[in-house]
Image (cartoon, rainbow, N blue to C red):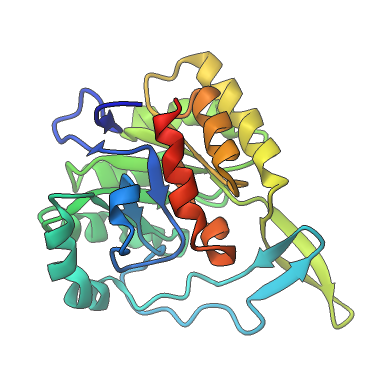
Length: 266
């Protein structure tokens, strides 16, 4: 794949990335391997500091793990104070996409307004949830910012039909999607979390293929079940404009170099 990839086509503010790999492993700092990725997607943030879920936050299961963080994060104000300068320096290489956690949905418009003129910030990624009125939340956020909006859908049966409402509300790209919910028994009691595993690829692929066939006139970004360069190739071949990489880097940071080679083969 050659040339920049536009994630906000026909929008007043461009979100062009140089490579189809988005780093979304919960980081805030620009990695040393920035020349292998197209953008950094931050840890999901809320407006104020959030303690998050009690321990344990990770439970291993056969073939993967369940995560329940409760959106633990230092809050947008602290993050901007610490990383604003570094993000500005990254502007010539890769954009920063700031993820906004669903737990702070009422604050999304205010957060987006704060990010509007932060050098290096190229867009916001809204983590959607069936418990909120997502189209209304997207519209409210769009009213406060011209930044490109990436809508990250839950991986459920309603996702394909729901996508059109997100685009109508002002989303420029669709991310498919947030990890599915699962449960395990911990100390004799049910423990709920989101599933990170290679098997999630099949769920992402189902929604991606269906949305691609609908030609939604918005770039599609695959996220979930990405553990190899082959997974990257499969998603790009199925209609994704880009691929978010997360859990694979927790297991093997060296995978990024291998995945980066994928852009040379498609």
